Length: 324
Image (cartoon, rainbow, N blue to C red; front, side):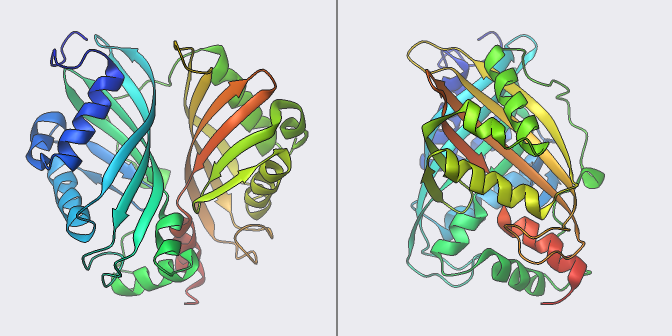
């Protein structure tokens, strides 16, 4: 781990360790040390630059959810300490809604939801990030439907012209990381599966997924079996049947005591012109920032974790239709 604090023996140790320091140990000021001053952070709901904005957002989250915990389920990574490393960090978060904030008046409700954060690090600092939080799971547990929450958020942010605009490639910020991952066979296998599915070859699910696969899907939905995978991916693609699907980053890994696994960050960009998971077609042009982790076993893809932000999708639809 050349260039990194010697207390971190491996890159996953570094990612898990600084996450604990920042959030659970309340070392928010360490973001001045661990994040570069001009870091770009992209999420489905916005894009910001600078660790000062990250610090502000962290404090706001902890004010609303003071007992929040971030349980690191996995870190799938590529690169080297000398050239920089990219971690795809899957987190299971628990929190109690004890303060007023972006999600409205405090409800006292306890939440659980997943996050996938792709972070590039070199010389003991994070300098580029993509962050996807399961907003659909959060708002549902607080009593909202994602569609309604997105409409209310637009109003609270000042309306169509003034509200924070969701992420699209047009407003992206070029950061220092230019890598695309690695060429490990499991990353390539998962990328091929997703390309087939998005190319309307849904037969890939029957041939490549374990029939008893476990699925963790947006909205906090847990499901099992290839039929459930077919229903999920069909519903998404049917809503955006002609949208362009792109693999933005791809990692595969073989690690001791772990199954073969892959991390893919992807984009889906095009018009909402079909009936599917997002209701009646509206013609809205929508960008979906997605991230997936997959684990493979002897009978194919056995566990899949998929994240995108349903509220950011609905926000883009509302901004087009203005019917809220």
